[in-house]
Amino acid sequence: MRKILLALLAAACVLITACGEAKPDKAERSFYAMNTFMSVTAYGSDSEKAVAEVQSRISELEGLWSVTDDGSEIYAINHGGLSEISEVSEVTRDIVAFALDIADRSSGALDPTIYPVLSAWGFTGDENRVPSESEIAELLKLVDHRAVKVTESGITLNDGMMLDLGAVAKGAASDEAARIMREHGIKYALINLGGNIMTVGGKPDGSGWRIGVKNPDGDGNIGVLTLTDCAAVTSGSYERYFISENGTVYGHIIDPASGYPVDNDLLSTTIISTDGGLCDALSTALFVMGSERAEEFWREHSAELSGFDMLLITKSGEVIITEGAAERFSLSDKSLTLKVIEK
Ligand code: AMP
Ligand code: MG
Image (cartoon, rainbow, N blue to C red; front, side, top):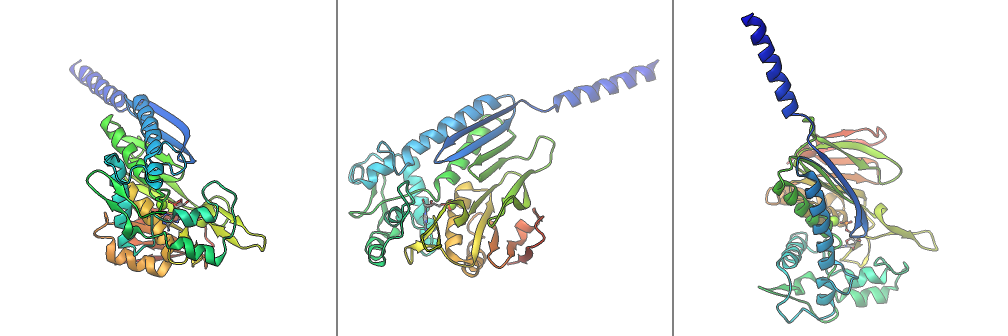
């Protein structure tokens, strides 16, 4: 009898534990913000509130950072409104200071003052066009991250200069989203801000989130990254481009050294680290650099920049991947060759 009771008790314990570990409440939300489709999935008792707060925070940040919305702080700074007075919010000063820091470290490969040139190419909503060489040369005089000053309370630019946070905003927003999730006690979440991925924990079943790395030269994915508590952000011309009358393809990422859309040996760059803002900034910067400089940059700066990892897809069919990323990556496109790089 005692044995039966003990067995029943044990079974009850297993049942209670199993119930305790049952899949927590799932909440999902998709919305359009920062010029892209976003989707957020969270598991936890507070998941509904968490995803709602993430969406409203992202639209708040968009309201501050949009380059085209005449009510945004960036618009006001670009049009002289907030340059002299002390009205810029801390979150905006922080992201601009961060973009300037990466601009500095990347020797200007990332430059948040690229906007006048970007506009001339029509990548800001207008009709795309190929500007003349002299027009580009003239506009490049307005591109210089070293001329931007972030002070205790404001941001100042030289006349005619304009800021564009397009290369860093979604990554910074993904960090905010992860912070909000954790504040709500969420242990498992997948935040997809138009391909800028941030994960909180892994999946509820204990495995990592499976993140496809897009084929930049065709359909589908070239492989899968398995991530836990980590961000992954990809940049590439394939995400936004136009084809001129003579058939040249021009992508939306501009090399600030020339004023022309990037045309090097890379098709895409994916950066992996715990810091979403960093991933976003570096994915753009390293795309501008090309594979050789990107590799050098990783060797020199990874330790001081959250120990970031990277995956570069080249035009010659190579996937150049750092050892830390290789451990989490499985290649499905067998037409590509994997080159693992070590420190
Ligand atoms: P991403 O998709 O994160 O690589 O960012 C690309 C976006 O950043 C573009 O659509 C532009 O708004 C902006 N951008 C383009 N080239 C640069 C650059 N060299 N530095 C900073 N921002 C850039
Ligand atoms: Mg970026």
